[in-house]
Image (cartoon, rainbow, N blue to C red):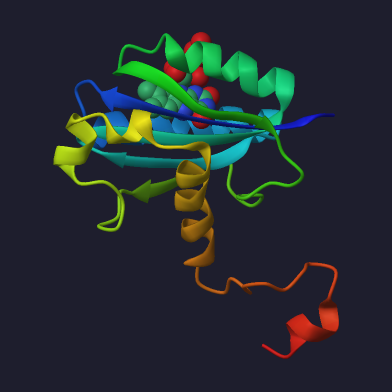
Length: 149
Ligand SMILES: Cc1cc2nc3c(=O)[nH]c(=O)nc-3n(C[C@H](O)[C@H](O)[C@H](O)COP(=O)(O)O)c2cc1C
């Protein structure tokens, strides 16, 4: 399998708690079946989703998501082969947009679409690093070092 990472941004259409809950329920069920993982960052003005999994499955899912009328202006920001998953334990995590991400003014001025690949990826890397229990810098294959924490 070729592990692929795809990150896109879009603008929610009809954003509310029920809509979001429905999206996440579907995502978690479908993604678990396909071994797709990732996270959906959301706010009234922004969806920013990272999808990772087998290339064909991720591409097929993206084609479906792109046509979903619960959002608009779907724009791919990162699409690449990945060495490893950033969210291996999450069929689809949900992350509310954080204060250190873009402001609403920046989003409406197009800052998300203008961001570089590294800037976009850094957002997700920071989310992973902020996870409780995250062992920053320790490789998974280093059980002795990990057990000290
Ligand atoms: C912002 C957003 C993110 C979504 N993320 C996923 C996802 O990760 N996995 C998924 O299966 N569907 C996701 N969906 C829902 C899909 O667009 C689609 O409705 C769902 O996969 C069911 O499609 P189907 O009935 O044709 O199988 C998302 C929709 C939106 C608007």
